[in-house]
Image (cartoon, rainbow, N blue to C red):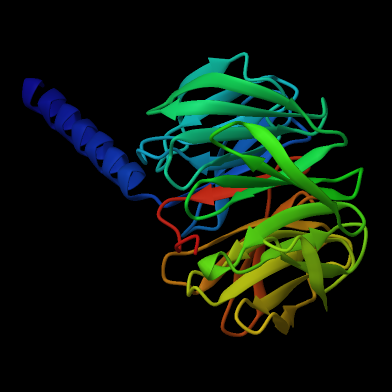
Length: 326
């Protein structure tokens, strides 16, 4: 009998070890469901959700911390950020009293962290050190700060103002607005092209991307994309960037050198929004805000491979590792 018990115990231990090994090797996609305050964790190989959990009110955007040890989730109406393990998606920490963090970003030199609060019309600038954030300045910036990008030297941050149809530039050393300019209707996503040549702005209230010569503060071109032009994700080849057209629905592919659209991905569910690219550059993963799904797109064929049901109003998506953000 004792031998039989030992055998069962040994088998149980082996099953447990194999289970833990499988979990450690699992590739996980983290999806923020802003409409039901939850996170969906997707097994990227099996293409299915294996866990859902509560995260906080209105999680919209997320990004990895400079030390690569945590993914920072911004809970806008929850007034907090939550830290997740980048590989497993499990909660590992929380910072409260980060007010209205909608879109977030670290400066390229990792010294500053910015939170754009589109509910409260404010932009908060923090000193960043490891996973600590110290508030330096609150900038009132009507109306509806939306998305953020930076110059490569970390001197200037740019923020789109969605409901006043403006773009502002902030000097990070002084934490002051140094200029603003009028742009198109409902500016949202913003992207800096290589070499800090141009800013690209997705006009969610229109069907185009505006090209900005930010040094001259001039709109130099509009690239027709699709209705509800919204947010960007670079392919990782330093040449092409994807743009989600949330209303159309479609995803446009832009050449950042020629400033031309070179293709479209169509036949998609409603509300394409945030995106991430697998490290081999073969797949584009997309959240579909209005369809409660995540989609997997084959980049070479520009075809939707599959969709995965998630929570209500999925927004941010992240997996580690992914293709470079350049």
